[in-house]
Length: 480
Image (cartoon, rainbow, N blue to C red; front, side):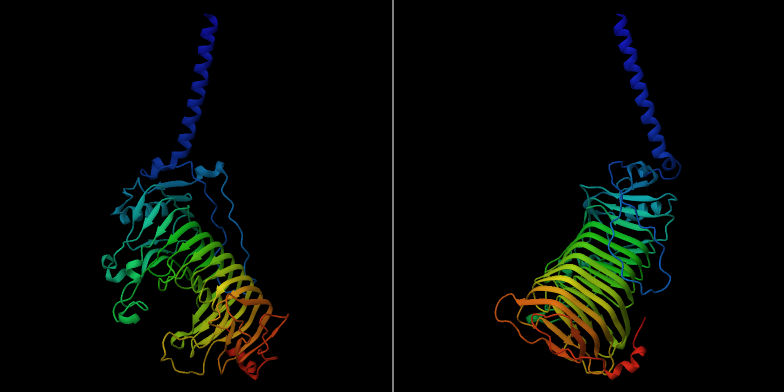
């Protein structure tokens, strides 16, 4: 009888001990939620990587393009420093039919005002229909947008307001934002691709007149220290990602998919943005895998697989006689397969500015139509007129580029401007063989100066040695 009573006392003591510990943890985890956000909830099963803490750049710099780095996860003992905002708790239905835009806006506004680091939680097992919306900053602290479920765009173009047809989800002035979670973002763009105004969708393969604006799936505008990682994005009506006027951007472990014939569905477009890392991603789509627009500086692309699609492009630049500047871009350790182009620089006649300090290194081509191409006569119709002005393309290096090409085009094409020649084009360790058929012996060269550092396949005897007289006035073209 005495032993039984002792055991009962011991069991009671242990139960009281654990109850007191759990109660204390719950109070710590929910402390500021009780005072500020009645609808926010903790989700302790999440693993949260740390957002970048680098300050936004205030002026352009010609430092070497950054190398990839992996964000380290936050230790679990720091987890409860995050305020968790679950979209379901804010009224989202998650049935794929109900419009959940208002709930997402409400949860964003609440999390944005949180003084502690905040997380918006989009749970797995739900599908959330969102219409065109802007998530506005600046916010009080760094934020994580944890997408574990599915986010869907409206399927029918007619359901979009006339003034909101260019963007779907916009993040504006969202400094310190991380979007991640392993979930799916689906632009459901098929009906947009089939509009009569799209290329080859009209009668007998023509392009018809009519409204043609199509939304970018995810656009980041005027934001610094942005990370997008571990997501699946598919079937955007137009570009899948677009970064405008941003600085310190990291893109990691993305899977981007849309059909090979879906028009204008660039995987990632970067414009007027500095210090960008794009790595460890797989992109297949109907246009450029990665496209780099004007005003970009310090871009590093590594360990990505592209194709089918149109390859990795700098440009197009200089359209409508505009000025454009791109410098310090590195692409390395990439695979490009079954694509219309490999690594491309494309500019319009009549533009001005420069493309400089570009490196394409260690790239494998698999059945690519134009593996290496500079096209300074870029035109989307047959009516473009010759103009004397163009961008100055210089200091471009192609090294260790190997694989196979589609014999419909030469494996190397250097079509430079009549009046503004390309200079310091360096080719080494290039070995490109036909996927099928006979080898094309002669690359295309026009007004291009440079050198080959090693034997190449095919040989490139058409690069002119030295420098043109034009360089006496080249400083007026340079941007940086």
